Length: 173
Image 1 (cartoon, rainbow, N blue to C red):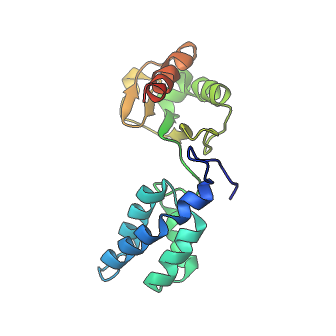
Image 2 (cartoon, rainbow, N blue to C red):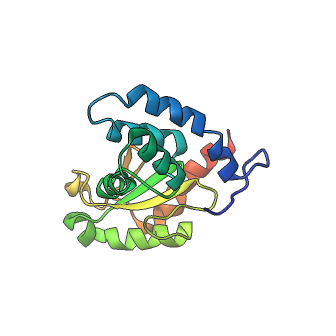
């Protein structure tokens, strides 16, 4: 993992290591439940913002489940991420209706505006970019979602305006 500078001067790696005692508490609380792996992984991802390899190894050891099985579950479910995610997840719908009405162009516009590809996160960890297959709003295509907010009939010329809403929220905090 690359070292990223935190606001207080520590590295991201150091900050994550400080979360391991909380991870121990999560595992200890859930380990005796049937099917504990997925709830432990969900809470671990909430804690770290993603699933770092060190955390997965700790889960494997403490739950006495082979690492390959833990990694297999993480890779199977799209909800889980092994790379840091941004504070805001942008999903561009590429279902049929959105695709034919400009979804692909929107995706390219977001890639350019953010300087990242699908599955990546901006350096400031503010945005992550992903693809969705259908948000159930085909008549209002093309559609994007940022976190839980749905944007309908989005045009590429509005990308900067949409992103600025989230950037301005950050600067006001």
